[in-house]
Length: 124
Image (cartoon, rainbow, N blue to C red; front, side, top):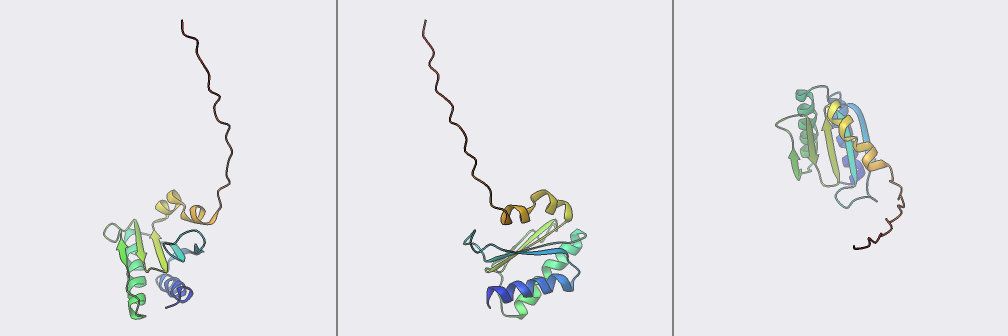
């Protein structure tokens, strides 16, 4: 399945289960790990788990075998790795703390710093 179609499938799976604040990030030029990251919030641990389960169910129904799932026991942050698309489904507090949208969508400017000047001490 093409990466764009898989991204749309993940978004649909999240929307079907009332996922909150869904964002898709194109990270093809930033990492070789995946093409897209889809980030969404759930209103509770149970909701986060249900959202992840729906993503997995729809992906499997489309013939996509997941590479892995992390965090599905706790439900604070569940990561679903579908190779070309990685879904991050989190509680709002966790999402605010890690702020993945900012991490993956903003280029960090290079800051030049002056090197410290070496000082010599006279021995007595």
